[in-house]
Length: 204
Image 1 (cartoon, rainbow, N blue to C red):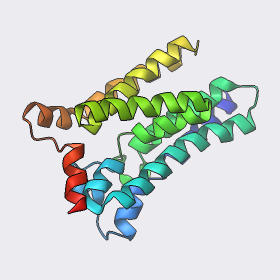
Image 2: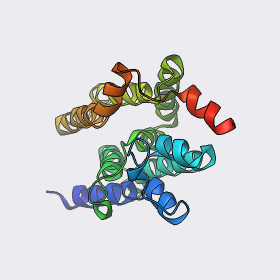
Image 3: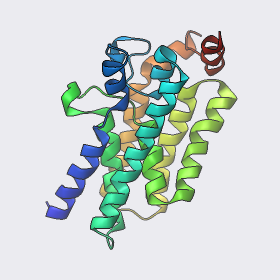
């Protein structure tokens, strides 16, 4: 494997391993967020358990780490946009499988949005809307997760990335659906917590 690819993979994965939901729950909440709520180490679960303020912080950090994973590799290898794209996908993987959390992290949605901001700010806005609009329409944040990850392989193909990138993006999308299998089951059973319910609860 090319040394530049190895360096890119390590940079992207290292950024992804900055698990803000876990760190905030440990040092501020004095708990492991994975043992509460949905069990997910991400912004939506932190919002449910610790409040909107911490949810916003976690979401922002997760977006920024995906963005900086791309920007740092862009700076190191300015003539290799594919490497920057790979770094972003590795940040998503690092978020989902952080080594110091026994590879049990979050679901990678915010990191993916951040990756797109790093690639191109217009793509970042598009992918942010892919999260927000479906979530608001359905009242389930998980809907935005699905549409965002479905957009990843589509963009990867349309932007002419290598076949290996397309395969990796498809695998990440499949992984997204697998990680959200519990959410899907709860939606079918009408047990999934709605966005409006969380907001209403936190206001009371």
